[in-house]
Image 1 (cartoon, rainbow, N blue to C red):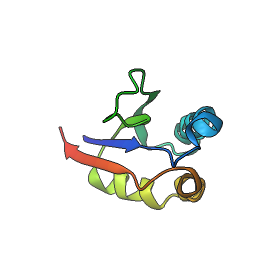
Image 2: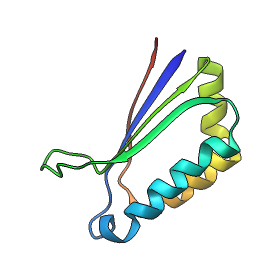
Image 3: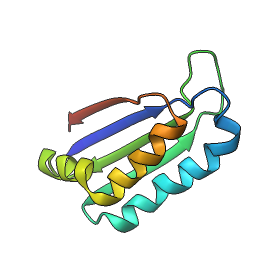
Length: 96
């Protein structure tokens, strides 16, 4: 099993207008990509100075499935939107 954790930080002035849309778009991906095993998305509630705005925690059966996810058309479409509202993401991928 592979965990994929991603942190998102909005570009200046984009959080309030795009937070709900970003989360909504992320939450549609498991319905479009059947090899996602688990998927959690949430907005930061503390909003501290060092916080990111949104986190994604997902899991896949294998590294191969994670790599397929990254190039899946639904994910690539999301990434195009993401680049218009967020800074480059931070991610960690590890085996459990």
